[in-house]
Image 1 (cartoon, helix red, strand yellow):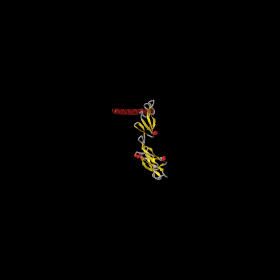
Image 2 (image 1 turned 135 degrees about the vertical axis):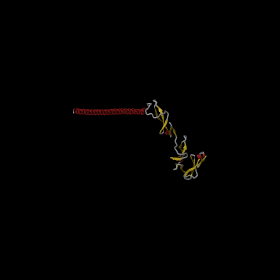
Image 3 (image 1 turned 180 degrees about the horizontal axis):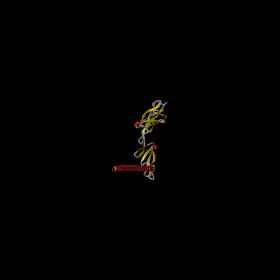
Image 4 (image 1 turned 90 degrees about the vertical axis):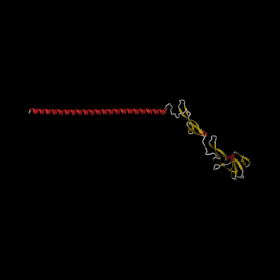
Length: 241
């Protein structure tokens, strides 16, 4: 009986001992898990904060520094240029260009800086400024449309002819006022009255032979076309010769 009771006491003691060991083991495991979790979280937070802080700081410094430096470079270049010349407008001394009707020349000053300087005004000679590939010159321009064209300018008939520069311009053809007449409405001749004179009487107006029809003089012959001139041979008599 005593032996049987002792076996039960030993079994209960063993059972209690095993239960205690399992509890301790679980506690240790939970503790290690908590420690690892806390450690991982702390490391992650620290690493994240450090990386974010460093990245923001580096990025801010780099962007700000680069922007400031670039801004300084642009500002300096705009004001002075690489050679220290402010507002340099041209690149090759001696080049010319047109500024409306004025020829401008690229000129170097005492400091070696280049700028455009005004020169000849082509309009003063009735010409226009023509420029290309760094060269500008005054050139004549056609004033009238075609050789032989006529127009009235007050009491004078003007004809379109080629000038010495090879361009078309207006020249005096007939002075109607000098013969006591006016330029006709069409601009092609003179209206010169010949009332009181006999029909058929002639007169010279420049190199043009005029014939009286009893009311007014009308063109009869243009001596210039034959290379001759109008000549008067007596009262009321004129012809090319």
